[in-house]
Image (cartoon, rainbow, N blue to C red):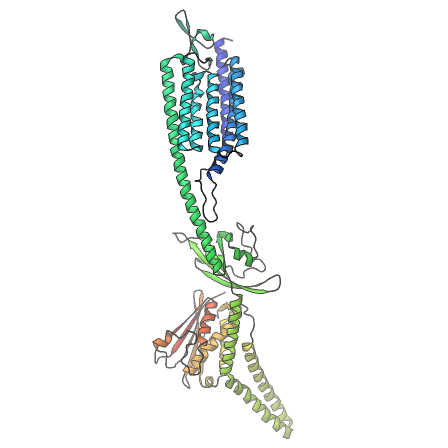
Length: 614
């Protein structure tokens, strides 16, 4: 086999091994985590940015990992170039391994000093200059300027531009150019030995005859390192490349720092706004949570965490209250996602200690420009105290109504009692069996009438817990009419019912709904002249149920209509002014609304709108 073929085989093996080495270096660099270039300083609020020394220490750790990769690469290149491909003489092997040892020792020192030194930037600068010295020594032992790896001068310059200040980076670039100039000048002036690099053939200069050979004695070769034009071109190109790389990298790093500073500023403002919002929610005595599609809890406030007994593992998972025992009977967040509008509900919670708490959940959708619901912000309010006050107010209102109905109640019970007394006296004197049978049926009817009256009044006056349930609208109306008939004035008034078919159902507290209707019916009876009619109607409109109570009275003036729902406002001589105010509060607590329509001389109509439930 000829020397030319052997040379080609050596080159082929060199290329193959070099490709493997390139893939190894790319894989290793891919596993190195590049340093961040966040601006130094401290931020207010929850964000704490590291100071400059901390950042530089982090960068130094990254540089240590990069240099270990470089050391492994140099070792593999040395093995490929000397014993395998024989591109360099064996005499250069000790020098290559010696400079590699210098790099390893410097890296060990850097890894130990970065945690102790108070000036990590100076330490980084010294280490990068050491890298340039090692690179210069390696090039001198592997062909000098003829070695294509002379372009490696650019890498320490880029690293310096990434990690150091702009002035220090340009200083490192100047040192790189100076060292390369010293290498070139030293070889040209024969102050430094020149090692033949056998990757490319050299021209033999013997007896004036030039022939191309791959391996000839060094003394007989004309090296490109001694050619002025070749040296000038290489030096100029490297100078331009080093300066441009340093400038562009410094410019890019400055832009990245500016961008990251802007991002950090926006992040600080966002977190401060978040803290401010949570503080407002805390001050308002509410809990808050952010719900994403599929009912994923993204975030919740500290108060919500305490009320709902949640833990830090909840964010990122489905809401624990969804379809679980003790959870919400109706998910307002799900309704907000499906309907695209605000929703609310109340629920009764029994704690581990047996204490009862009432929570109000209000969900508000967050939409994009296209109207698609992206998130739902849900507020949680502890309304236990308010519920207690409402219960007391409702109970007081019931007692007030019963006071107004007292005369009718006495009449409703007194008439059957008087009839019972009369019939019993006649039974004492008359023992006729037929009369006895007739009296038993009559007595039974009067007793049942008294029992129904007492039972209705007892149920209405009882201060029961505000239990939400499905309520039939027709049954609520019938119960209210039966109660209002206890009033003497209602005896001469006709109640006209126009009810929808089928009857609708609403979700609420039955006693409170009955009380609202009793208030409205009592006002209508008082405004209706003797022999008049009070109309009660229901209608279904999409997802709402509308109840109307209208009378044929004298109507209301505009100044009265504008204040009719104000607490303590009344047009009655002995009125308190709480009936309609309480009714409006109860209707709104059920998610509905109440309006009044009236003109002087044309009567008055109250309309109640409540959400319909199937």
